[in-house]
Length: 384
Image 1: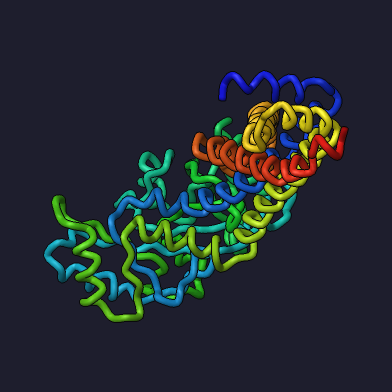
Image 2: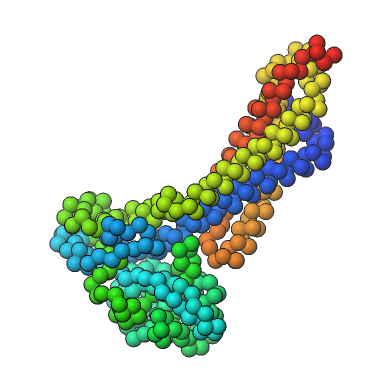
């Protein structure tokens, strides 16, 4: 097969303009697929950063909860009841809610997500949280996510400069006493962490004892899956018992199947594949049509249809590889710009790069297989 590659290469490079158009079309299709897959993965990754950071093994949530965006409260008695199992080491409640943050500079309000935790225990494996937990014991103080969008004000920069940072949260004046890093998501543009006591002061209509997430730590050496199974049988059916991995998948599944966003990004990827297939088909079909007499000559001297198919598929493979490289390079630059603009975790991964390369090859092979049907009409008796 290697000896047959020069023929495909010479045919492909004979018309430099046509080659450039073909490579541009393939690169465009790759960029479209990369964009859709990149934003889809950023959607999933950003919305499970909190879940991944939880310092626990098992999570309790209300059975009616669908995602972080729509959590339903449940009685913390369900959480403390889990302590009856010998394998459970400790339990920790988490409050969460959305509220309006007033930009201290512009006075404009913007919604962000607030977490209330017991400052005696670090429940988040996030930069900036452990060293600032003691500060949360003071009244009306919060930790601010330095990765929040700029619309909330220059909070992180002012704090780093040693300035006193205050703002209004639900018509209550609060003070920023530290910074942590979680990141924005499709569900929240900003995040705050405060103590459970401060949380109930801010959300004064919330009933104490009705929590949103329960975090359970099992004793060292205990089987997490077995403990989770025992809890499902022991606790009332109004709570959902999930391992940490199940909790991550629970959120990911919501965004993938219960929202239009996941479907739109998947559809965009399919459309990019179809567009690329059509572009490559047009190029290869024109190539075959222009050289129909040459192919007929090859048939006349004894070359088989299989040989001609291999030549076209080799040409398709070369187009796929050459068109993929500029598409990959441009996408990396585009990811960087999108990350700076949206603060979403958009970055190139090895798996995604390989997946799009495979899709590009399949796309070009399909186009080549369709275009090669034109060769069946390359009958030497008719052409000559």
